[in-house]
Length: 194
Image 1: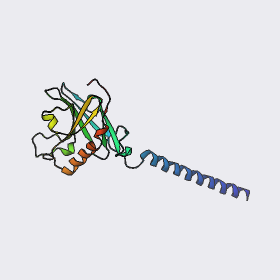
Image 2: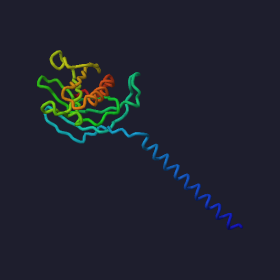
Image 3: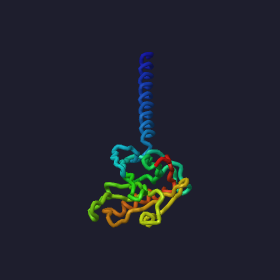
Image 4: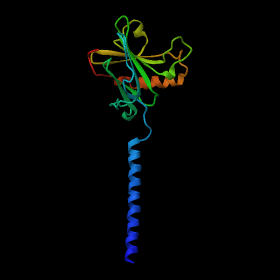
């Protein structure tokens, strides 16, 4: 009888241990994934430098950022653009995108945001540009295309949204543009060297 009680007790302890381990694995798995993974992180995987251009790919969120009262902070992410001295916010949920820092012949600096999914065949040499941020947009041609502006310190930045003419998927283009437009006022300067 004493052996039966010990065996029964050992089986109970083993079953209880297995249940605790299984619960621990489930909790660890759920906590580690926290729902749907977000596919964006700023990582300068590709960098092509020339005097006028720097291009970087981004596929994952860098970090969350404090937001204005109209945006839920958990829905916003940022990407640092060190070559432009900015941290750009956007609303999560868009597929991956790239950016290229440019300088026009007149000296105006800007950064173009592109997506391979927006490259269409309607326009010659289309690169899938969906938005551009222009530093100190002037009253000339670059100022005419600006749909929104925000001032950070002494510098004004303009957001220019690409026309739907070249886009193969206007719904996706609108989604990308809304993501950047909705969080545009959260722009931050990270460096004054640019």
